[in-house]
Length: 467
Ligand SMILES: Cc1cc2nc3c(=O)[nH]c(=O)nc-3n(C[C@H](O)[C@H](O)[C@H](O)COP(=O)(O)OP(=O)(O)OC[C@H]3O[C@@H](n4cnc5c(N)ncnc54)[C@H](O)[C@@H]3O)c2cc1C
Image 1 (cartoon, rainbow, N blue to C red):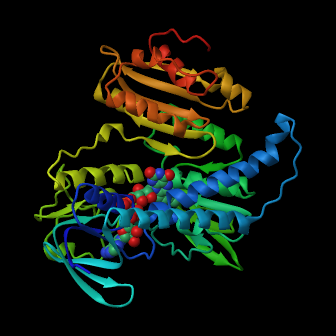
Image 2: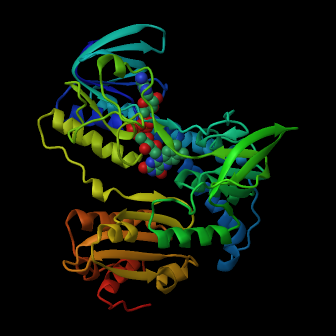
Image 3: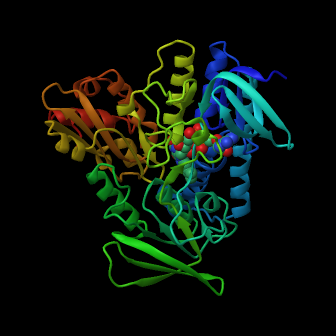
């Protein structure tokens, strides 16, 4: 086994494994190290994949219980939670094995162990069998990802007081679930357990759900979730949690201070965000600079201040998203190979995989107003989309923002059925710097929900036809 490579990648998540694969495709040798024991990182093991597996299964369960009757289908369904969890675990196993196969195909050595940078070009790995390997490479890519952000004063046990990791592995449906944080992860996992029968209360410090998204969408989203039975305590903070006779007493108070209130819960889910993970990596010892939030500082070629050391993914700045990590992985591998790697940071889409889904890319109306940029809005409701109507999925709308002078698409904000699969259309349009008219005059298949995207673009110049 060689101990010398063109590049060593520390971390086997979407950032790390994609960097190793792209390096292999470009003819460069690499090792990809991950301490978890299975490749794929947060995303495949405890993040995107298991959460979406449960969202899919719980949505089907809920549909069968409540929506089939609308279609003339009588069904009596029962929940088999162990089987639902088992299918999730199976798909995770298949995908993580798939990553190992792809690394092998790219001739990257997959090493299970903890990596630490001992000097530029040098990485010490404590392998799973307790041995130590000293590896060398011209380039080191840090792709160590992120970890759950802790809530001061609250200790996770991952059984009753859980992070997302515990929330995707509960062994019984909690009667009462309190979620701290109305961000993407809290609302997605809150939806899973709501559909399976929990009473869900979401406590959010700020005054809105999914802070940072287009305000009109955020308001519509909160309305829909409230209709589904979510209870929201906005502008509220959790100040403590106590275990009493097997149950939880969660103390909350107004964010600005005021009277306390105690909520009963069987499970508390802490979902207040994620923090970069760079512990025991040797960064301080080699002098790699970090910012105040613990992220590795890089230039726009992913180079740290230490020659030959790069960082990508959740451990550096930018949205903590798997596809952002993947695109940075490709870019850094290409830069190392002497090519021109590039990521369009203004065109990274985001999705909340609830029902309805929420998806967006580019600028929000609030951002455009703050920039003083003149823009036009085109909007189309799913109530007027024939496919959504057929499917009884008429909640939500598509909204397009375009420059008032040039008509360039500046942002798209969708709430509705399957919008996760549709936002890519606007990403492509924006990559090509399309005008809203380009989308409006592109033929879309009928009857599809994608027609709502075209109709919204038509709305920018006021010639929407079906609303
Ligand atoms: C519940 C949940 C749902 C999510 N859903 C989505 C989603 O739907 N879409 C989306 O885009 N994103 C989603 N994310 C975010 C996504 O998982 C992350 O953005 C993505 O995994 C980041 O990739 P990464 O490669 O930077 O890091 P990670 O995936 O975190 O991988 C880093 C890896 O490095 C390893 N590591 C760390 N230190 C060392 C070391 N010293 N030596 C060896 N190995 C080390 C870790 O074990 C880990 O496996 C979700 C996250 C969570 C928690």
